[in-house]
Length: 74
Image (cartoon, rainbow, N blue to C red; front, side):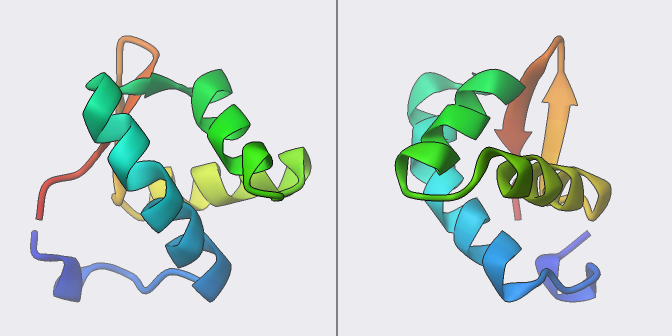
C-alpha cells in the first residue's frame, strides 16, 4: 500500500519516523528498546516515544518481526 493511502501521522510521529529511518535501516532492524533509546537521545520523552512507536506500528509505517522493528517499504 503506498504511503499516500495510509492514515496520516501526527507531526510528532512523522518526526519520530524520520529520526528512526536511518538507524533502523543501518542496523537492519531495531528492538523496541533500541528504537526508544534513539528517540530519547534526540530529546523525546520515553513515554512519548512509546506512543509514537505505537502510532507508527498501528498505522503501518513500522512493522515488527521477531522483536525487531523495521520501516515499511514504500
